[in-house]
View 1 (cartoon, one colour):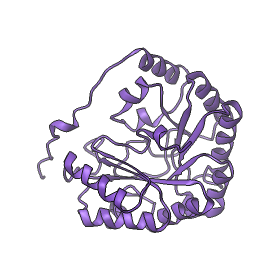
View 2 (cartoon, helix red, strand yellow; view 1 turned 120 degrees about the vertical axis):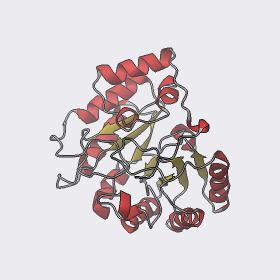
View 3 (cartoon, rainbow, N blue to C red; view 1 turned 180 degrees about the vertical axis):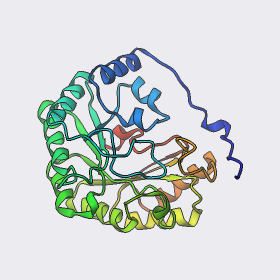
Length: 283
């Protein structure tokens, strides 16, 4: 068995707590909210919760897929909670968020793959928090444009769908999603006029030219925002890290992406899909 790649100094995470972090943590835990901050072992949880922001995960905490990079539990999910859309909207009001980020597990077990629940959640957030802007990070809905339309019609400000990795590695680490399907979802979002966003991980064994090809593919379908972060292996059972990409290379990726026409780019070792999401809203 090959030796694991050692984690470099620049990936050390600052752990700290302030009053806002403590209050955000209390709200999340006392309201039994599912957040990708916790289930995804996000390295930026301390920073984001310290600013009173969190990424809510709807449709339960069990995913019907089992991607090799993801720490979210997979298996047979429970039925949808009909009260969740209002519950999440009320929690956003309690946290006084000016910008909310929502994601979900994949629900391939449902006839509409959870799209209707997505639409109801966005609608309730807007009803209870009319001043709050919304970014949603959606599944691929198996590429069914009619289901993506349900989310589009609810009118969040940004719709994101992650490519996750380059074309060659995608079938190795994604359990059911397909590279071309993801591109078609992003294209459909962009064609609707809503801001389209995507995120990728590096350090899975991709080459720089493959990352640039992915950027070109995203720009060709109208993607405007991209996030690029280091893949971190959640447990020894997950896909191994091939390399830890240097901060200098992340900066290079940022400059390349901007030169290719992306309006906004977040690129760094600890960047995740919703990192600095509030900055991506154009007022």
